Image 1 (cartoon, rainbow, N blue to C red):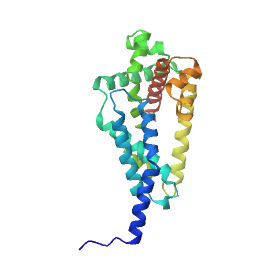
Image 2: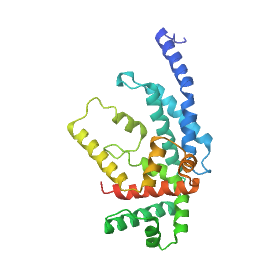
Image 3: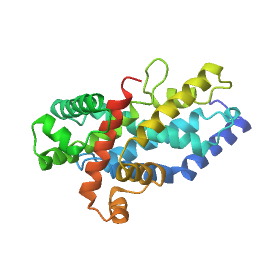
Image 4: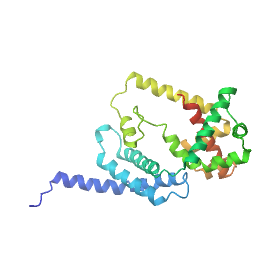
Length: 246
């Protein structure tokens, strides 16, 4: 005998379908933002597929009692699902990851010694490379930077799962220690960004706060997209090196 569907179940199913359709545009928008930062080898359809699963998961697990909108929650889940998919692809070779580690190590050594920001020329010299070769290396590893920065955002158990991160940010009550830790991290990050050059600070601001693409930032600063790519990657490597002790 076929189970009879209640009126409330029908209503929930209709809401679920309506919500998925209503916020489907977020998947394409967020996937497109990721695609701008990733190598051409990563297919756009794969980002869309992962993001769509994130949207469905967000709708199914949405809890209005958390006092956050479905749109906000969906954005977090879509971004998280795409990042999780990128991690599972392991697109970046061992040699590329080693390059990132080598640059981070050299930057930290230089800055610990001189107590000032490391320049591209100093890093290139320490690596035994000419300036152009070093800057080309930054261009090559730029795609990996998206994942590297995201790895700084983890839970107390060092988990990078997007759902865990989001839920941990929706705790009903923060302890005094939570407030202290968050305030301290903000201060450390702010002080670290202040040590960057004026041009590097502009790139950070335009990319992460104004959400301009690398090409758009290049137009603002009268530089090529490739050069902005190099500056952005250099910034991430420097932040990685300076924040790893914290």
